[in-house]
Length: 50
Image 1 (tube, rainbow, N blue to C red):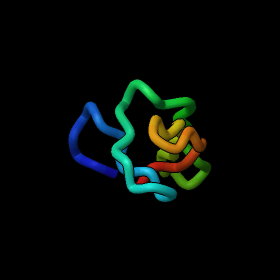
Image 2: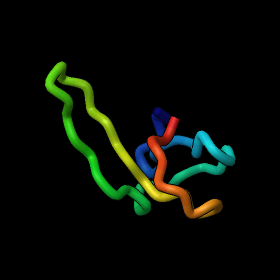
Image 3: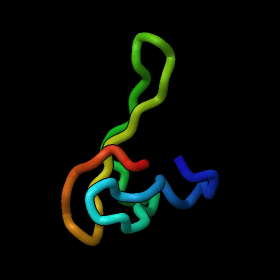
Image 4: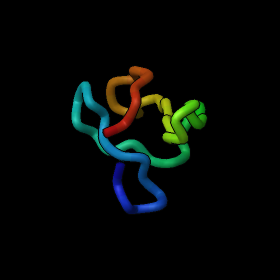
C-alpha cells in the first residue's frame, strides 16, 4: 500500500496508480488485516492494489 492518502496503490495487472476514488470495497479480515478491492482506471480490472 502506498502512504499517499489519495492513492490506494498500483494495479498488479498494468502498474497504473489507483486513486482513492476508485475504491469498491474495504473490509477487515478475521485476523485484523484490512483488505481492499478497487477498479483500475487504466485497464478496467477489479484488483487488490499493491
